[in-house]
Image 1 (cartoon, rainbow, N blue to C red):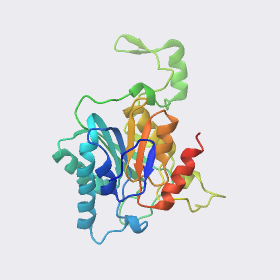
Image 2: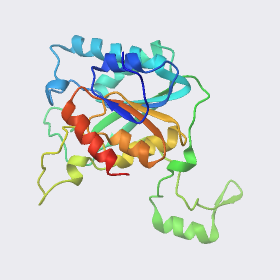
Image 3: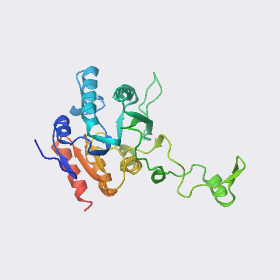
Image 4: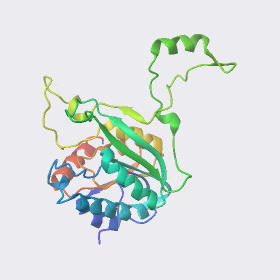
Length: 260
């Protein structure tokens, strides 16, 4: 059995990796797992039943690794997230938010239902006494003219004069963040990226700022090309991550080393 070290990435099966992570060690887990959308070999399953059996198994292996008061964020489709949420509730974790990521990268066209342009992020905690730094993740106000006026004279609310926070408003549960696919277009065309489903660095940074403190340990057991590790290092957190692909781990380490 390998000895666990922080600020190191592993190339293991997800269950072998979680087996070496000590129990009650992790402050924050950010997980972008397979979605069963046949994006690649790692995202392809024989059946929906096989997919959920795999998903629930790695969740069950992960939960003991999280500290009491620690947080878990899990990305997936809205459909899959409904089943995952139910499983997390059954495991006695505490629901905090169903976050909706508005990817802003063009619609998945459909003539039989509303076009899909979102992914879901489930935010659960292990216990109620969890870290949440709401002031660290304020976002800009949308009505800039009204806010500019309010900054000078305030707005009367319930007999009191309200002034906007200079750092913006508290962050809501719908996140309008362009996908990496959209941000990296060349001449308006989508180009092949190093990974099929990379998540925006700014989104992972938001999660880390909100749900961890400096020197905490952030885990991603499907690290892909290393965005969670990069964000954690930038924000002075410790990271631990894993992927079964040697190619992805190589890309991840290259990105991490560039921060030195």
